[in-house]
Length: 158
Image (cartoon, rainbow, N blue to C red; front, side, top):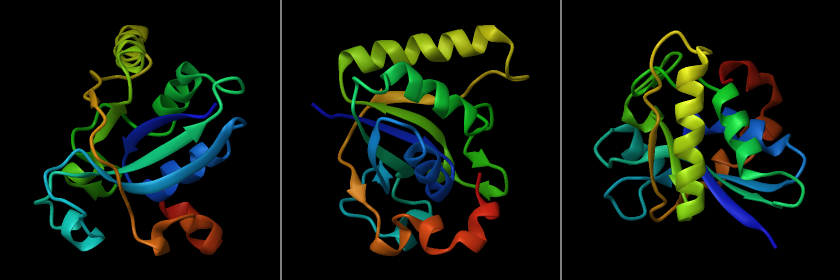
């Protein structure tokens, strides 16, 4: 049985590509979540008034990859200590966030964040938000598998 996880870690193109590379991840979809506007467009999210984050909905097989392993990958793929920013991308739509799909995911995400903060791995405190998953709006088709469609642009996002 497949499970879902949702993460925001900056530009969703790089986050999607990173999760797709993990064994046990069956799909990763770019989209928007965590805001107040229904069915937002990319342009609306970029205007920063929807409250949504660029996020990736990950469908995974928990017998092949655990939620804790997804969390570890999440911490590695971005800087969770920068508020509303990843590299040159600035704005609340680029915030670091974990949107949990169950109480167990909520518990695991909070424990993982606490462990990462205590580990000394990051020079500043982690600012990642952890909140229950809300409606996920799939991004426009041109955002899906972006680096597969435009491999020459892959160096722009990490």
